[in-house]
Image: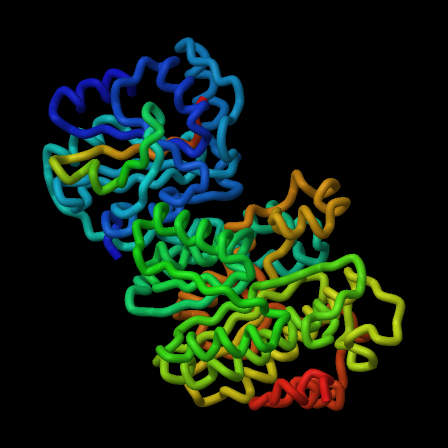
Length: 41
Length: 463
């Protein structure tokens, strides 16, 4: 299964606004770099 | 890296950082680093799991850990402490417009970060990658070889340390599956292991029905799963597994379509002897009578699947307990809730074996499993002292659910039937000879349950 298909529908909370954001919106308009941090801090 | 993030954004690359702490942590992080890119929070690790990122002992083990920390400190960085899940590793992905992958970097250890030049190279070359699952950990052979010896004690195996050690032996490809078109039912699905199982199965594409006693909690859980996975194929139905009439009514609806996965997860642990609506002892009714009746009533729908699976979520507590066929419903003994729980969890393991034999050749496999010591709302409320003492080492509900998910989804789980699993491996069902039941006791349990076609008016000792 393509990673974009797995990740795309997942909605995460935007840290600034609190609004849910589907990950597929990140690469819908152009290329995207998505970095998963080990942790904040 | 901060300068690189700005540079990529200026070049028209959408940059997003995902963290597993809370929003409050993320807000402080944004301020500390003066970030302008997207920052998203994933406290339940849904996206981390979907991305196949490692979680385990490697997060704390790194040859470069101390040199990286020293270098970071010399450059002025200060880390106040891990804000999020200390066991979780990160990664980075570069997507083309539309979602094709140009770069995959899954961290192997805590100091393993993506290099800026690798991102630049991926963007410049624009070569779409073959998306194969991540490889097994290089420590997998060691983890598997030492498992039997290191698992002799529940401490260090049932707890989160045990999960981290066992997970080193997992094959990530096992759950690189697409469950689209498959239908799964999960009892006790609104919290804990049932919720984590439902979430993961929906995430893998399955249509999931949450079977819960409470309609409001069921709807709330279903809504959370829909939001987290983006799936619309998440529904719920009320059923009280201790109430045979309720089970019959639910099954009449559920049996209308083929069923691929049935997970018997609902559980109770009362302090005092309580009787169900029909007069059965509550743990027996919930763990034995209800699931047995449901399996029988959904048998045809399971057989209609080309890959039917039944998973009984038992408990490690049953390992020191014998199948109790002399007063299984505590009519003549002084009630002990923990013991009643363990006895019925032992009965579940035997029933899984008996159903596996009954369904042999039908295309339906039946397994039982135990999740280890997981930090679930049920454990916290039913075993407060145990929860208090062990809280620091308890597994997450997701870790407890891992083997349920694996049994429900992985091809490898269909290679056998009637086995008892722990952390994706079939394990022994007895630690002590004294817990072994006789053939007569097994036959008595099957008879008590009414066999493969239970009559609710007569089965389970109701006649």
